[in-house]
Figure 1 (spheres, rainbow, N blue to C red):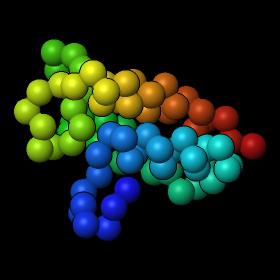
Figure 2: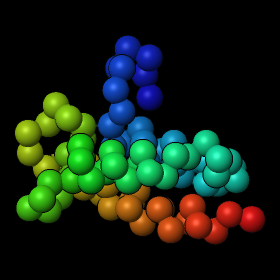
Figure 3: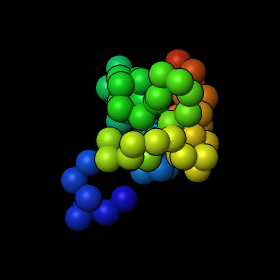
Figure 4: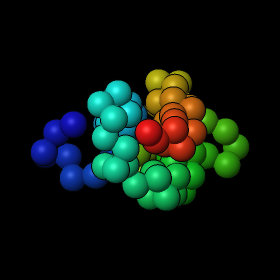
Length: 80
């Protein structure tokens, strides 16, 4: 979302994936990397998602984006 921020976060990832899907740019999304990012960096084992690695707790807004990304994953299988 910003060149001064050198790492991914949930909001930027959600926006990028949704935009790519809307434009049919499926090849720009690396599904294994996205799944790994969601499960190892954003999702807490106890539930919920955080914005990025710097967060120590879940957040309602970023849980929305984490769930949104999770919901978009099956759309990657619908390539034309």
